[in-house]
Amino acid sequence: MDYSKFKHSTQVRVRNYEVDWQGVVHNANYLLYFEVGRVEYLKHLGVKLDLSTIKNENRVVLVRNEINYKSPANFDELLGIYTRITYIKNTSFTFEGYIQEVTSKRLVAENLAVHVWLHPQTGEPITVSGNFREVVEKFEGKRMIINDIPLIP
Image (cartoon, rainbow, N blue to C red; front, side, top):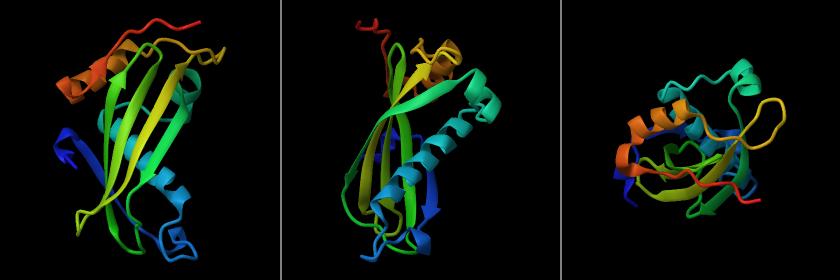
């Protein structure tokens, strides 16, 4: 895995209540780990995340969330969560994420998460904010694709 494409990472330590009866992290917890990575990424970029902006300005919803499980994570392991935005289209953008066990460098899981920008009152898809595009492009540089794709009826 080439982690050099990722300019942002954060870490979490597996807690006892995240482990299932098989002795490994329960599959649903990986969704939470990737969400931690996405939120920390956005905070790192200076994107304001609070209830006021989420309800009134930046209404963004998750419409697709894929995980490929590569190896189990275990209690007390330190996990590195690598996150980046890989593309921004007309009304959507996609996060790519990887989780790696820090000590062994073992790949634990891969994630693809597609988000859609919505009008705060109508809930209809709208063009991704120009400011958001600029902030992400400045951070990611040539590592991502920006496409203005017309909506398909």
